[in-house]
Length: 371
Image (cartoon, rainbow, N blue to C red):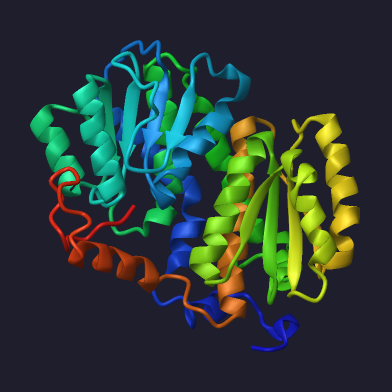
């Protein structure tokens, strides 16, 4: 697979590499959004004002929903909506805070610890999960559980985690309901699936960008609302294509990372991707163009990906879909199966075998743990 220009990124070519059919999950993003709305409704959650706002506790693919929800709410957020990735909650968490514990498997030890910490504080808790120990604990404690479709990789449940965070934010008074906007976004994404998916043109944006990034270490830059999407691109490239990738945020990276590009030439093949949006601050838009020019000397190529859509959530999810497809196409171009993530499973096994998980929310050593 040395000459990527000759590789046709159609279903047959992808299927030859994608042993677990991750492509189907990526293309199902519109369907997942609609199903997520139904699943939140099925949980029959009650409205409960939370002056302290919402904290979304999760790791990996289960955590990104909180960050994307905050970005989608934008200036419509009336209370804090923050994510925490780790074993503890923010120090300012109080009983007036709602804590959404997000774990696809229900076995993530960090999220289990946050669940217990929220309970000890007397904070309102909600769980979004397929089940596992987290689901068992929640049901035993009378904590509502938002179900998630099973059989997915945790990173493929991005729609479920994002919708759950948005709906819980609305129920705790941190933002407005966005059900209709999510429905419209699903319709919009269906059109983009046709354009960017395997049946789309070989010179379509997703395939073209994947070919350009093949063999490089991508540096993804977002700004404001697109910052969490840039992080999503980074993690998807990490997990699907199995290559290093990094994410930064403008304008901050112009005060530090920009200087690092001066010494990039000769160290490796680096590429820069900037995620732009219609609502990006005009000064940041100017920075994108200036920064792109300034890093060009140390990069194999620089690229701008523009969001598509009318509403904020449409545009953000368009970039999520684009990044997911780019990462999958990168895997195929590199002859890498995008599904398995053995090193993640290995570190969990080592932690479990070493007893490090003992005592974390009653989590027994050696038990399966994943986002």
